Image (cartoon, rainbow, N blue to C red; front, side, top):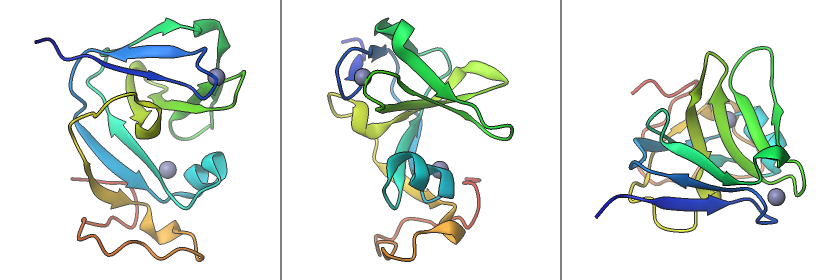
Length: 137
Ligand SMILES: [Zn+2]
Ligand SMILES: [Zn+2]
């Protein structure tokens, strides 16, 4: 059976499909993820480039594009986070796990940017490898 994962933003107007199993998932404790989500950490899954297709609401997708680093795409109607996007390769995306409808199969396998972790929530003692900066393995 062909792999197919679906997802949507908070208001449901942006919908998308992922046609290949995600590669891996990572908790991110960076300051930008804290700011954009209002939480201590965000979890995203690295996708096979080109495997995500928007099926509804393309015109609603907005983006925060910092001068350094990945663009953060979100729904302009509800503000819901969708995925990050490599500015050098728009097909290279990491989807936010919370926007998926079903089970992506993979589980978060590391924590990155732990040097910037929120002071008000201890990093869970879950045995996952921790990277002070960006995940490198
Ligand atoms: Zn929305
Ligand atoms: Zn982050």
